[in-house]
Image (tube, rainbow, N blue to C red; front, side):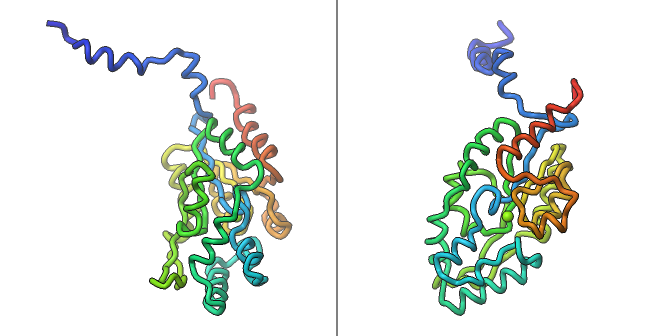
Length: 239
Ligand SMILES: [Mg+2]
């Protein structure tokens, strides 16, 4: 009697890959930890949804975003009040979002990034808004919030999944053993940027950059890629 059946040995065989293939599939490690990039969504990978809504509806007050107002609840209550006054519901906003495209170069950057490490998108937007956009982005993992919508489609309110969700997610990834890089453009990103091993401002407005001068700033995907590559190029051998 043989200890291993032929079926078992053939099923194990395909899992053995040549060393060269394994080399290519390797993701980056920094300080001995696998790389995880936590990225904001709006202003980094897609345009600001509310600015698109302001343009389509001709309501200038909806142009204000987390880039302008630091208090997220104040900003959201203002937006919801305007929608109520104008009789605009979820379907109206979704019709605008259907016209939103990823920022130029975003898909190519994401394709490069996925070969380097793990990507999680941390956003203060809502699943009801972004789900149609995720297909274009290749269905990345997104942690965001939810809307409270009435049966007639009126947006009644919003439900934060948790307070300080971006910062707490980055802290949890660190506890899980990842080297974390956080990328964002606005006030609501600065706490996760501070928490991350490396926090980078991506094409931020002047007011955010001035208030948070200690964060490195990149203006486009080429500069962001360079900043990430510096992480592993500058590492001592064997790290
Ligand atoms: Mg943003």
